[in-house]
Length: 275
Image 1 (tube, rainbow, N blue to C red):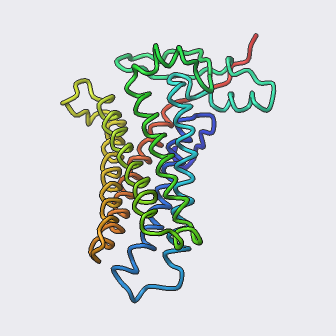
Image 2 (cartoon, rainbow, N blue to C red):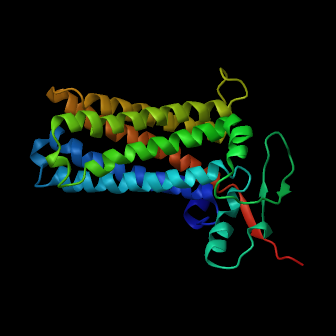
Image 3 (cartoon, rainbow, N blue to C red):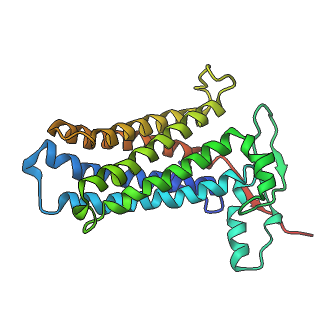
């Protein structure tokens, strides 16, 4: 299976999917450290939630944040995703990203077309206002990136030595709120990405692999909203449901990210020497 034999470092889409997948897997492990002591108190051990859960959640959120930055680069390089490696090389060496070409299978076309992309780290405001802002994929990616950045606030505050010193007002107004708002933006982004894969907004597209990724990511994002919402409840069952929801939501988002990882490997960048 190519997912285990090919490391497509040159492809920005690969990095986004890879970082989100690893981050979600870490969230799954962290959620076990949160949920198990509540569900099975006999399994509890010292610093399980603060170190095991808190530190791992921070690491997962950090990977999500890095993936979000890459997601912005992906959003402004729609047809140049395979040239990320050449663009990075240009930063440190005298490489020419314009010599990077890759085959990209366009929708509704049977033949591969050879594209000659021009990588850009950030477009001009004119390009954003006249072109990118009208693309549903761009809005979806930017929304997810902003959501991941807001979500990262909760990842920082959950660290040992910080979380234990947070007063209730900060927990409600900053920690859980950033968790909730970030998840809401994940849902918004997921809906847009689903719509992008469908020919008609009301007609599902199960024959499109990206649609399945969007469905699973949307399920995961909704779960994270529920998990954050349960945190505003003080009853004992709320803590149980919050931690359990974090677990299954992370599993769902992991599935979606793995599908994106698989989809990202459907491109074959090659390096063409100038003559």
